Amino acid sequence: MEAKPKRKIIRLKEFDYTTPKPYFITICAKDKECLFTNERLNQLIIECLLEEKEKTGFKIFVYCLVPNHLHLLLAPSTQEISVSQFIGAFKSKTARRAWDFDISGTLWQRRFYDRIIRREEDLKTIGQYTLDNPVRKGIVSKWQDYKFLGLVDSWV
Image 1 (tube, rainbow, N blue to C red):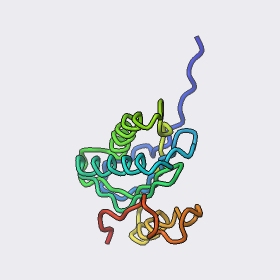
Image 2 (image 1 turned 45 degrees about the horizontal axis):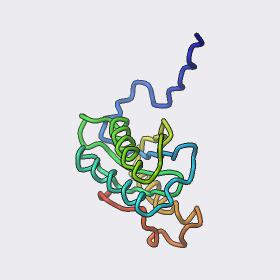
Image 3 (image 1 turned 60 degrees about the horizontal axis):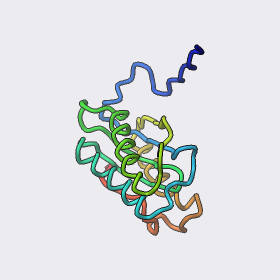
């Protein structure tokens, strides 16, 4: 029997991901497919995100869902739930609910990308980067016209 290849660890060793610091998260759709083009599905994904926020007490400063990925700027508010646990619960909930949209199997890639935000000016820069994502993708000419993004919790 052939041994499975060991997965590369992409989280920082020895770092406590329950630390109430801001994190910039990118979660890609399965195989980076453009799965998020259905308005009802996109609204459902955002509802799930806000449900997890309420359930866990996480702060969500800004989010943006474009056709093949989701950007989040968030922070745990207590040290009870890690970023990975939050993302795992969110991905699980959205995957189950996506079945109503004839999306079978996996909705999201297995992993997600994170960046720990260390300075307040980085928070503002990354927040604006997140808001400007649909403009860079050519979806809208100004971020205020895009439906699937939001400013939720204040970052100042």
